[in-house]
Image 1 (spheres, rainbow, N blue to C red):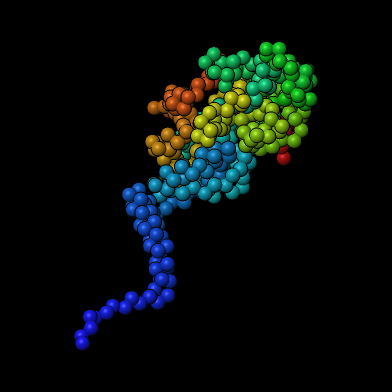
Image 2 (image 1 turned 90 degrees about the horizontal axis):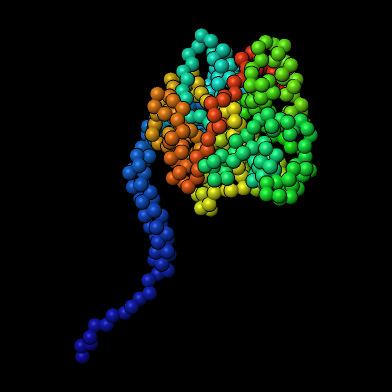
Length: 395
């Protein structure tokens, strides 16, 4: 009798399951890699390993923050440029023995650039001015209320409580009187801040940093009736007048902005000399992180204003290539605004409009640099060097 053919279901060997379990994650990894490759091809980045990348070596002071920014590095890499940074204070930069071995240097202000030019006499030095930023003082709202009550600062009319104008002569007067913070009532009849230290403005080392030496210049200008010294004896006399304002601070650091923006900042430095862009960059980070600006930290703008104009000084074709990019490349100019810098207008003019527009777009008011046309003039280079050495004991 014929039987119907039968079918027997046989369990596959375990090795088959093992292969399937292996292939599943492998397939996911391949799919992810393919997706990433498509994105890299679309952006043009995938070709970079097979293209020449120009490595540009530079010495930078505080403006190294710009080149350390991941977005700036990404934009530069699109142009096949990579920057290697040697961090150093502006004054140290100008005196380094290996100065000429770099493709570029980026001191923080004009007086340090003059020293570099002097050392580079007879050698190619190409200047680029991508952005600028004022010297300011950063403090906290309760300390600002104490200074306002004393008449040292006044709120900027359209500053929404973020920005104040600072009378440097009145600040000097309060410091020289040996005033303590807990002796100053705050605006509105509030109790003094619980700080038993003397009122001072903490500054980076004037022997090593441009911001520290510039603050010395601002104090000297105010102490001398808005005049610069006329000769060596006048400069040394003025330096000795200013020196106690630095001596009461004790040991100086290099960078105060990183401490100022930390939660423990008020413990280390209630009032600090910084650059405007460092404060604005902090506010942008707060907006990105929390959706709200930091209203506890405020800025004080000296009424006799001083704009610091850092120059990127290129020594080689690679340095010049970088200088052209940071000065003219639209994405880099935009990123400079996002990091709090003021970019130059057409023709190299001082222009606040682009920064004001960016601040307005982030919901922040635009500050004023000073209250009028009065400008703080720094002493002539040689006299200023003598003053800095006298005040800071530079070696």
